[in-house]
Length: 334
Image (cartoon, rainbow, N blue to C red; front, side):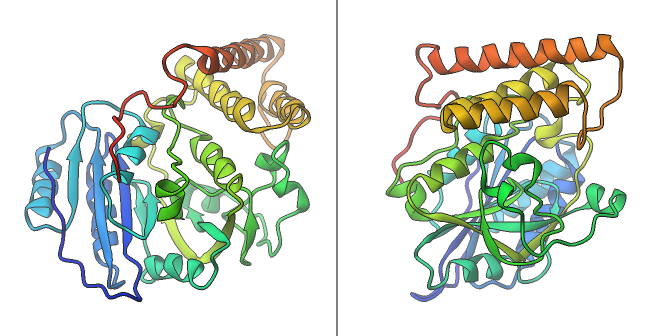
């Protein structure tokens, strides 16, 4: 394991931002993402990279080693692969007043870090900032118009997941959750409230950030959408937490497992029923906005994954020995 910590220029009025990039299976795009962060002119930040890749291309490894040796990044290399565990690992080794979580395939415009810091300024009720995400794939394929105000349904945990749009929304407002590739939190969320990401979320780790944000809201703090804190998510087809095909059996199983795990942990019975119904209508039957094709055989197959995912989520919650949600990373005092 290599550790490095850059020289940080800060004062009492400038919050230190710990920028966290978990990475898995990325090469050139990871290097570009790191360069994009280091190019920020915000005066007080540290960059923590938690590397879960077993063997990098030599050029990538040389770049990471050089950045660590020059104390431009803190580099941690671990022998497991779990996005929520990588976040937890970084949290307990960071020094920031604000924790900013990014994916390993992003491009940051100048001012992104400053916009995250500004979102917290003078607003003690804000526990998290959800940044805008210019998703390269979605924007190139979509003709959807811009949105000023999200509909009321976007704050209802039973149905919100089909109404939250942090790609096209243009105005600041309270939101239910953030996108995992561009979200920041106050240090007190982790230190005073003791929250950590649940490492029981599997595979693509979908909904692990939603689960975390729902638990943040239970502290009484709100999640604020700040469109000025924007970046470009490249959406690389391989590597990262998407390193399994959406057609694979593993993806289908973990997709439903993670949705139901989030729901069983955080939702009321009424909200759980409505989420289950929407999940069934969209992802099993294939109705809009999913628009999945296929005849009875495919629907039956998807229903099998749906039920299996529900049962696995129930087992995850009752299985002895992992109820604290820590499966990979070892707890460390902050």
